[in-house]
Image (cartoon, rainbow, N blue to C red; front, top):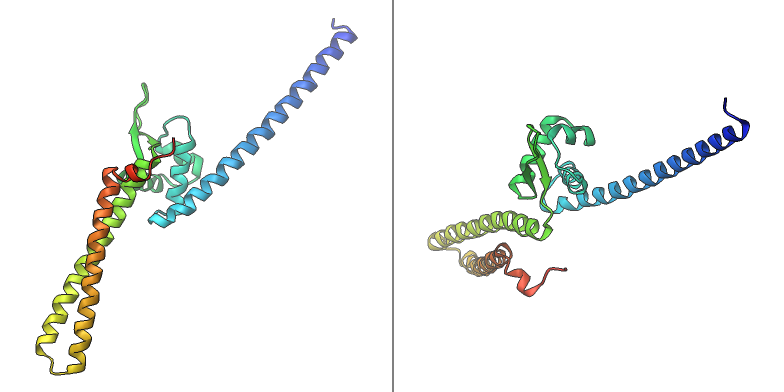
Length: 200
């Protein structure tokens, strides 16, 4: 039989153990709230690059997860449909922010976040800005062609002067887009880090 003094020691240790577990639970909760808050900030700021908040949260979850995740893992963690997870992962993969991962014994597709944010930024910035810059440059070129045609057929002197002025403005825009394309190349090639070094 257990003596009273032994029982007191046993109960005492039990109370200490439960208190310790409660303390650890509170610490883990605080940790998760802190990380979740930062992930929300990441998701919000990614909107600047045309990434939806839900896809931003997905990236944040992958980034802070110690192990690669399957689509099922992501779905359970973020409470989103598997289809949404698949679409989000594909979008992030196209932007080189997520990459496939491999783990022995796991047959399902695994994914992990690209942890080199400098590389991700270079790729994302280049893809987004190149597309818009090329489109804007082409639109400016087409506008110049149309205005030059109109200039040749109109007899309105005031309109001719306005067309000449606007064509000059469009040429200025084209020069800017040409400069911007060179800047994009500097970012994409990594040459930008020669001028603005990475923080170590």
